[in-house]
Image (cartoon, rainbow, N blue to C red; front, side, top):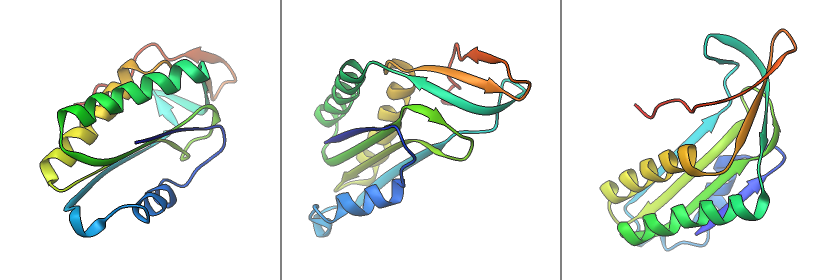
Length: 145
């Protein structure tokens, strides 16, 4: 398991390649990957930027707990979760969830659950900078449907 927080932009595909250099790929039949980027709109408003606040130790522990619970539920060989904190601009990567398993269903389902739990349980507080210069706190996450 790897859980990382980045205060600067990161390349999710580089993290996937880096992790795969450590894995026995001949034994792994599936990788499920989700990459989430910041949009330039939310709730019908133009957004110019986002600031994600967090408490480093608490946030990392919560992300690790979410991944450990997924590892206990599904036959997973590796997980990589990366999340931005601090200032984020539209089109920059916010989150990476990558899951490797011998089986596609385990990889797919674990990836989806980790992502939803990160979105709804991890302690991040999001403040948007709107086009008109005002700021607002994000009160709810986009539903996973």
